[in-house]
Length: 291
Length: 261
Image (cartoon, chains in turn orange, red):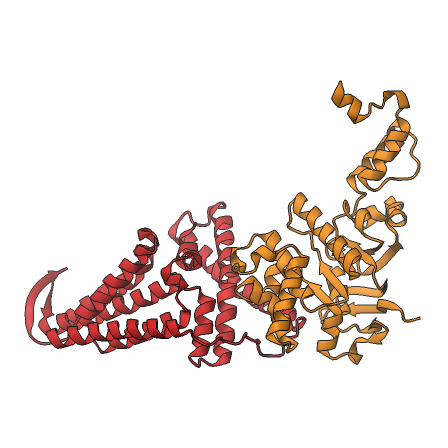
């Protein structure tokens, strides 16, 4: 049973000061999935990510990528399969200009100048940053730096893309754009996307499955509806429902408005509300405009 | 833009003008020739000619006067101190006596000449480097240095320093603002303490940054050597430009040495 893109099996990790960052974590992701690790700060997301890409070695448990343990891969092989985008783009953007930074990985792979150029073009195009090509990194906005950091990782052509808090520090529009970009990479290019986040509002729209982590343990995993239905668990993990779900949940609990399940997205909430409103009160937008 | 940011900003090097369009290798070679001439100049005429030329060129490509003055202010201070120290501490032929706080200070002819020459060389050299920096992005200069045979390890360090100096400057600016709004600079003593904290924190953060950056580089295949792109051959036109500009500098140098040396 080794058709997982990533299979972390009963992984535990403690830092030298004794802090147990991960305890018996099982984390499995199939190829082509979009999976979110949802956890509050200090829950072990970043540690797990570092273990998944081989930067840290677990004290117990094994990590397999594509059915092979990490030690079976050379670094070059491993990092062409799995790419990591850091939370702070400054950690990752090491060159002076965008094109040079995106070229960093492909050049390390020993590709020819022509191939390197193709990869720069493709990667920048993927993230919608073609126009930034010759710009100096330190003249980019934070959102642009995030895009370029993703492009630099995509230029390695990984089949698995892991992102640590990709929406952190972005404005609401930037947050949505980033998630849409990741959704496109997942749908259109078949890249397995794993992201660590504690931002809950957009996850139900994009993530196929969510892993809920708290204090180094996986509390629950499954589709968004399964994970978000246990509000007590969310509270214990210092997380919350998406705002739209919370509104409808409160309408249900405090005002007795009947709900058929808990909507997690604006689309789902809209459909539920439309069901509750009498048909004669609904004015089609077209008629409204004419009036 | 803060003072620190203005000092380090390379925004003018990113603009499009005849100086920024020149190949960085051409500019670097001409700059090196000029620096050599400055080093061997026997009178201040050539260095001062270079100062005027460099400042005029910077202004001609629309670098603001304020920025030029700001960037020249530190070397001007150094040049002044050199001039004063040389004038009063070397030589034996007195040309003037001054009284300062009850002490008699003698300005000597040899010291004055030597101070003038060294100060002008300092200003000339710094002007050349400032102009070069204001019309060429640093990373392009590094690539040009590679063409001239600079060791790869030095270049890697230079590239990373250039990249992260802006990150650290942002950090310093944020920390100083955070201290200022909590009265960290309300007295000289507090300012010293606050600045010391900033300095220490920057060192610690730099080390953290280095670890994270190294990890990120490893994940993109870094194995101890940054792979640079191949440097293309220098165009014939650039060779000509380099030759003509170099010759002009050498002729100006020769003329000033012959006439006044």
